[in-house]
Image (cartoon, rainbow, N blue to C red; front, side, top):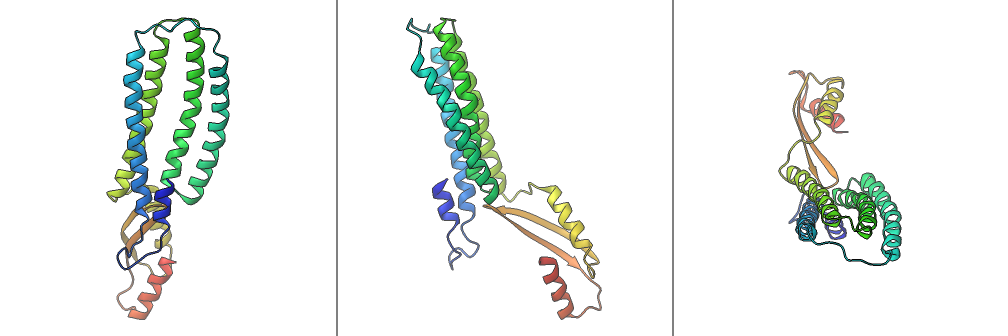
Length: 215
């Protein structure tokens, strides 16, 4: 995430006249791929533990304490990442926040698994690891799918498109607005549209109207 944000924050250049905002989107996709990979690894590990009974041991005080601390830390981290990601509209930080919030549920499930495994209930450890793995895979796929759509210039906000059309239509001098296109580039949305005005308007007036619409 840090690497993607560093690239995206670089200034426009002759080689990259549109900036490197999409580097952050690409990094979000990579994060999603790593999350999915981790989920598949966990799924295989859980399946391997499915038929292995938990060994007898003393009450696992340290793992229980670590799981409890993990819940608190994950919550604080997730909240900070989500607030910052929402504020700067960073997909990478939002992806990390989603993973951190998932860690809270994961830690609680792991805590339950530790206690149930201590009670020597069969299959519980493998099932819990597989359940967590499915959640991780789902999160990973979500963090792959959305950046892919963004990189392919999909319109992900039809409500914003409608709001833009209505706002432009209300500007004095605009007779018609059409072909409103929205594409996301990193944290920014790039908008294009065509507007029509009266045929007798001078080039100066038409240009002035275009500036007004852009503002």
